[in-house]
Image (cartoon, rainbow, N blue to C red; front, side, top):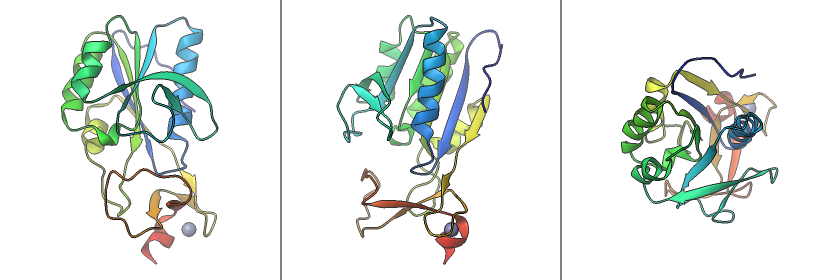
Length: 184
Ligand code: ZN
């Protein structure tokens, strides 16, 4: 469970895990609580994430919050005027300019909540995520359940032979598995 802190000014939170780990659900949970607190919130996501509609951050349980698709991290900075809380989903698809953007947002007093995949389908750290862990005040790792053995899972195993890193997918292309099953 994540309890909102009382730091004055802005800060950075990262929610990371594999596919099916509930990252977006956790992002939405925090954003909804901020909305209840009558804070101005916005969720940004990269335009590459086109699995669902262009203007909604939609988690797998169809829990919707309106969001803003952006081409790059700089656009978040330009569009986040007046926000008290900025959510960023699928952060692994942004380049490393996202670090400076998040630091700038937090420097303006904004609470920044980032959700993303910590590892790619080969089990390697995904893009900018490790650096975001480093600059964040809070890092939460969420886990899926291994579909093979029931253990806690932290790997997004790709079921197809496609080697493209940007390939997005649903249950047909990926399964969540644990370290033991990933190594076997
Ligand atoms: Zn397993």
